[in-house]
Image (cartoon, rainbow, N blue to C red; front, side, top):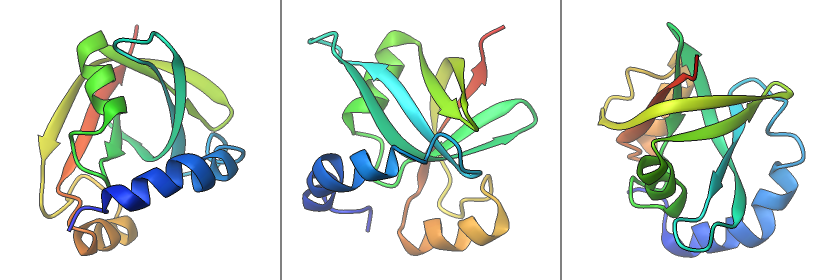
Length: 126
């Protein structure tokens, strides 16, 4: 049941600008900063973001076929704003995990309830 595209459009126009004001500072949240594959335009997308063992993991609540994921994979990296700083990430890979075992326990139940079976994993650029 990945979140519907109509909700994605609403969030892109209404929710994301509001959420974007605080997402880069709150634990469990971040902002993906990426460039369009064709336009080269910069975009900022609020996401659920977690780190563990030096890896950054982002819940793909709208699935793996959204523009920011495609842009990040095509570019071989992305930047995330988290806890007030920007981190450059490299080597993004999309993983499939229906149990969301990669996520913290409280978040795991939310993600499985949404059927968010995919996440993007990348590491900080050295």
